[in-house]
Each structure stands twice: as structure tokens, then as C-alpha cells.
Image (cartoon, rainbow, N blue to C red; front, top):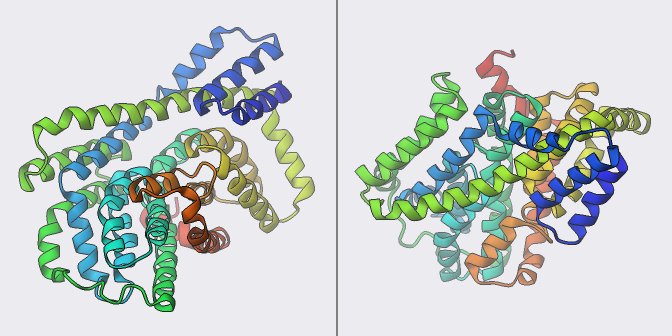
Length: 427
């Protein structure tokens, strides 16, 4: 059955069949090849895969992000970030990184971050004489913070598929998010200095006090979400509902930019995005069940132990594997298929499952800005009205920088685990 599953999945991917359909068809082919499993198993496992309380957080966080975009929250976060770092040479580029970090703390999605922030900052950077390919590269790479800074949809998927605490994963994402954001800000400052770009980035920015006053209601949203989770007031799933309520109150009641007439379109976008993710989760649940039943994880674990004797070598091999996978497979599908296989192997090497979850997510986040299937790459090019091939030369430096940050995150687990131990007491 293993060969039927793997070969059929590879062929379907090469043929360009949609991810969810590829995984579902490969699973059906595997069942037929086994010959002893009833076809009723398909419906049972696909339903069981999405019959999960933590998964309720996904549509609610997507809805919260859409409400924020329409309610004027993203614009005020941009102005706040610009007031803080916009006064230096390259400050507008740093504003992009910092705003994506702030917006990620409520949206949970890198693509949503790309469209919400890129629509404001890419034109602003071009207006300040940044080359358009550079502006798009900055936005695409910064938006990947949307899957690192909690709340994060990929972290929810990893937690559900490996039975790892989502609350701990959310806390653990802070350190890697700061490392990646700091690395990107250092890179853009160097680029701007070397090329003489961004010398007038401080023009037209508000004072920090005025920007903070305007953005204070917007900042209440991440405070409600993260403060509630970290203090134990509510679970991540309950926090997603609180995020929707907070986004509605701020957008409608305080900023008054979110109108009832906007809600049908916002709900439509949310349903479409949620449906795409849930179909993938459902199909991947069946696929993962078949892989586990076949004994493949144990075979792979044994093979890894024979080839890689040390944890350092194992983690390096996993990073290389995930970087390649992330270039060709959508993030949600990659997590749901690979996490149940690789996490038990990582445990056998003494790697903490929370730390390993962040390694997987940072790897796959890097895949979001690499061709041929980098979703952030295409989203940023769409906003900038730019062909993908034009952005590649500029993007190389950002990919290398995030990869360097990934190596630090991989081999310095304290970056990930120290906040978890501090908040959860090492439990």
C-alpha cells in the first residue's frame, strides 16, 4: 500500500491536480491496493478528521483577519509602525516588517497579511523610490510572520495532527517570530544603506504619541487574544471567537469604518478560505491514517536512525527535506501529511515536540516565498502588479536570511522553549 500511496500522490501532484483531490485520490488508490479495507472507511476518516473542537479556531481567525482589514485596523497598525521606525533610512521597509508582525498577531494567515498590509505599503515604498521588485520582496518575506506569530493556522494544524498543546505552540512561536523579524529588518536596513534607498522615509509620519492614540483600539485585539490565552482565561479556540468579537467592536463601534453592508462579502471570503483548508484537512486525515496503519512511520524512523546517528544530523536532514517539500506542496497539506510521520522520529532523537513544530512551520513558511508554489510570492506580485520572474533576483537575499534564522531556531531550542517554560512552568 505504501508504494501505491506515494507513487499515485507524486503523479497527481506532477499532473497539477488540486492538493485536496490529489491526497483524496491517492488515499482511495491505496485502499484499493490494500484490498482488505472497506470503502466506507473513506467517509468515516474524512469526517473524523474535521470533527475537532480546536479546528473551529481556523474559520474564526480567518474571519477576524478579514474584519480587521475592512475595519481600518490594518491602516492604523501601519501608521503606528511607521511612527516608531519610519524616521530612519530604510524605515519604511522596517515598517513593513513590523506591521506584518503586529497584524499577524490577530490574522493567523500570511496570505491575509500580504494583501492587507501590501495594499498599503507596497505603493508607499514605490512612492518613496524603492524598486517595485524590492518592495514586493520585502512584503512577501515579511508576511510569512503571519504563520509564526500566534495565533497561527499552521500551528493549529500541527497541534491537532500530533496531539501537541496549541497553547504551548502559540507561546513558542513568539521567539522564532522575533528572530525572523529581526533578521529581515537588519537585512532591509543594510540593503537601503548600500543602495541609498529610503532616505526620506520619515516624511509625513505622525508622532508616536498620536499614532499610538489612534491605534490603541486596534492594539486591543491582539491583547485580548494573546493575553487571554497566556493567562489561561480561555483556550486558543475560545480566543478565536473573542478575536471576532473584538474586531467587530473596534471596526464598527470605535473606528466606524466597518459597515453592516460589508459583512456579506467578508463572510463569503471567509467561507471560501475555510472550505479550501477544511477539504485539505479532511483528505489528509484519511491519508495520514493509511500511512500510520501501513507502518511507514516506523520504517522511516528506523531508516533515519541507521543513516543519521546524531540529533544535529537528523535536524539538518529534516530541514533540507522540508525546504524541498515547501517549494512544491501547500503548507496545510504538508503539515497534515508529514507531521504525524516526522514528529515521532524527532521524539526518538530527544527533540521536544513543541520545538519541532516550530521547525516545521518556519521551514514551510520559507516555502511560501519560493517558486514554484510560493503563495506569498504570488500574492505580493499580484498586489504590486508584477511578474514573478522580476522579483526573483531581489528575493534571493531574503530567502537566505530567513534560512539563516531557521538554522538559529533549529539549533538553539531555548529561543522556542524558554517562553513556554516560563509561562507553563516547564510542564
